[in-house]
Amino acid sequence: MVEKWLVALQVILAAIGVYQFTLSLFGIYRKKKHKEYEPKKTFAVLVAAHNEEAVIDALMENLKTVDYPKDMYDVFVICDNCTDNTADIVREHGWTACERHNPHQRGKGFAIEWMLKKLWEMPRQFDAVVMLDADNLVSPDFLREMNNDLCSGARVIQGYIDTKNPHDSWITAAYGVTYWYCNRLWQLSRTNLKMANFLGGTGMCFENQLLKDMGWGATSLVEDLEFTVRCVKNGVNPVFNYKARVYDEKPLTFKASARQRLRWMQGHFTVARRYFFPLLWQSLKERNLAKFDTALYTITVYTVLVTFLLTGYMWVDAALFNGPNFPTLYEYLPTWLAVVSVVATCAAFILALILEGVKSWRVYASLITFPIFLLSWWPITFYAFFTQNNKVWSHTEHTRVVRLDEVHGKQVS
Image 1 (cartoon, rainbow, N blue to C red):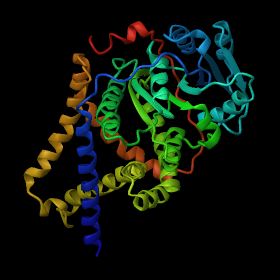
Image 2 (cartoon, rainbow, N blue to C red):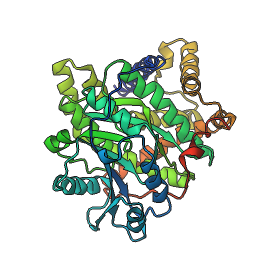
Image 3 (tube, rainbow, N blue to C red):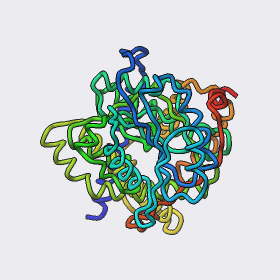
């Protein structure tokens, strides 16, 4: 009986892998043109910040250079439990610093919920809300692109999350490869198939009325995924804007990266427990592929965990008991199929870099250490499973000050 369950698990994991790989192929094609509109929508740009005096200056400068009428957007920085000069720097640039002090409800989700209530009490009401992180930079056309999508009927929009420091370390390079892959062969493929895209925590835009109707309510450790699922459940599919770039600072060290990814996985387990089955039943009842795809994404954390456990079991069995002593899927499939699947997976990342026009030899050289980064998700996810009830937000310290003109040369050198 146990042997049958082991084979069944392997079949399910293989089916999910084939499904995701097939979807990724639809990201190869990119439509070059889309409808453009004159500036019509007004924006409240919210920036979540906790002790970000080292990097906030660059973003405040950057937002002054956005190619959009200055009277049609305003910037509000949420200085969440700050003990440094973040608020003073924001005010020096003429933007609004909103100071929040609540040591019992720490984290981005709580800060955003607090800020939205403040925003809705203000005399001026905006058409849409953009959310950024303090370490970000945005492309000059960012708000114009958000305006285009809003005028086209979109209500929730995710911009293209890029990295501003891919050459700092092998870890930042790994993040860069991951995000280029996800933008091209994950997000864009779902755009081409008219399915729901996934919010990435920054570079997000929301119709103000939708936020008022739904409420924020996303206070888990992965507020972006939680709000994505709530939107899809309510029939609102987030869209992806390929041209609206937001540049994010990635952790420099493996330790900082592991801590950040542990928080993501802890929060992912929470969202999976809360939303997978309701969304799955809803997708089957409505025969809605977008909802099914989103439900499947919520349990990605479990597929990573099960893959790790099965692989670990196989290695231990082979090393200590001269295995395999349990049935594997490969017994029923030709050997060449396993080789093809591994090669195809590796080729997908290289293809994504080529499609995205990455020319930096250092990025391609980083592919040598990239498998270490991928494999490190396994123990991180395993540990997250046993600590998933942790609700304490772990702040990622940002120190890398980069200006937009420096970012533009990152893929070439």
